Length: 105
Figure 1 (cartoon, rainbow, N blue to C red):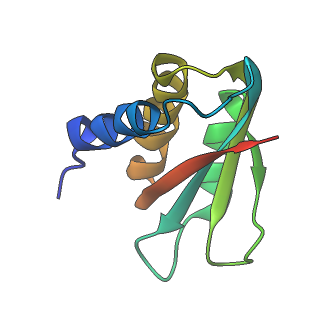
Figure 2: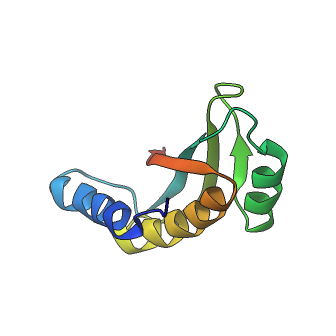
């Protein structure tokens, strides 16, 4: 099954449209969440690939979720999407799926 990047992008941009009036920082660390599709997920492979692109990796719920953090980056829909898309392309290639992002402020 292929990943729907257009839908994912719309969700990110919709989040910004819906948050009008909310004071956001100019820059912050952004954390992207990913979950494995399979029981025997390649945690080491996805970790190496994301770290090679500059993401900091953590696993707060051991064996259930991977967090890829980047930044501080500019807090705009375009900048968040740029890093989200790059991380998702890596994650999908390791059979992980994205589950949103949040600011680490």
